[in-house]
Image 1 (cartoon, helix red, strand yellow):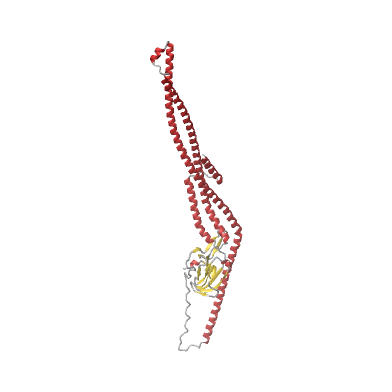
Image 2: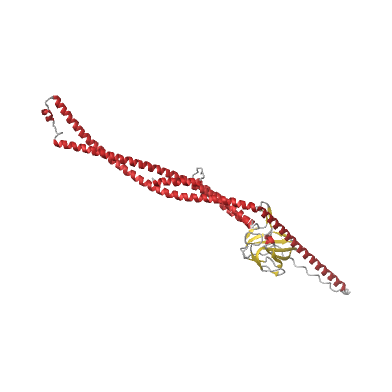
Length: 454
């Protein structure tokens, strides 16, 4: 009984510890809910990978807080379903413990009754045995041995005969009754003993079951406490991450505005470079035209025999078209594509003006096309940037930039060929992890790099 009371107390303490009501539900229903929550968590984890890539140019602390929050909110339903299932297990254990306790109490009460019954029967059996023994002794002394003839001869009167006969009959009936009582008492005692043995076996089994249930309850108590702690931890962290996000939103908005301004400034700077290049090309063309005209004026007139006309200049070679760029990493793996996307934290659309390639810290980065290094320098949000002037393609200016580098392998003014090393990947500027942010500019404006990579 002590073990069963301990069991009930342990389960009661668990219920008080959990402190959460559980709606009645079948085990299968709880299993289904847990499986559904786990499936949704797995789907959310897969979706979060893409979201993480969209946060590549977001403040690291804010991005991590957002990722953590999404992870927590995916884990919470799983943790709650686990807790609900644990609570249901507690209720089952409690009911089974109560049933065992009641059955054990009833069995022990029956055992006490049977023991008392056997004791009473043994006393009655002893009394009956003694009575029969006494009658046997009296019979041996002749006290009960009066024959029918002795009744007739010995009686002096009819009344005396009747009296003696009645006494003798009563004595015989008493003797027979005592013998019957003894037989019945012994039979009842034997049956009661069999019942008592069965009850003792049942009590032994119940105590074994109770011990096992106590061990099960202790394990359930630990699981429930752990599940409750996990739910509470997730809720606390959820609140903390929400607070961090709200506190850093305005700072991030300012950072994103700064990044947009820097991108616009870079575009303007590239366009200025293109303008200077166009002006220089126009100057050179004008000089060449002036030289040509001067040469024509200085040439003597052709003879009447008709000399050969001056040869026409050779046509300029046609610029390449289509996939004119090579991949800037040895093993290209795109983590974020070019295009407009909704910022998951700030809630507005912004242009992701390049293609992000997975490039762990220190990964070699290569020139996508031959050209001249316009600069290799720090560019604020872009971090360490290499800008290559790749010349004219299909009559348009082509430039490529390699951003967030940890270090450079080239310097301004240097000529490079396709596949030459320009630097090593890093996480400089606005970034959350090492990667390569690769941009392509046609006539000073960004275009989707994938339209030219191949």
